[in-house]
Length: 161
Image (tube, rainbow, N blue to C red; front, side):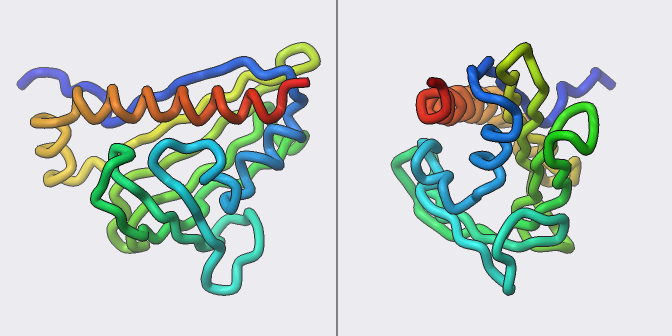
């Protein structure tokens, strides 16, 4: 049996903003529509008002920027602000709690007076997701990586002074 490629990808961009400013932006899911080519809005749900492990929100997605359009439930799975660990992390699962489809996240590492911000996704390794990835993974990975680069470059434009 061959080695399966990782079910995911990542893109990193250097920003001239300190980790605290980047964190405030990436962990405010209500602002994602300003930056993402696919997710054009998000709202905190189930009483959540901000980032915390277990906080829920829903994202309004226009797949590939053209459709279909749908709402997707999300749950914050990692929430480490700057100064708590060696790098800040904001990560969330997409899908229902019992069956998340994937995880998306941001790692923020200090770099001089700025930050290196890495956006990433990792698909759940369930058999049906592995099957999808085997058939369409290369195309979807390229689409996701283009979308992550667009998102990060737009965030950079909003943050860089």
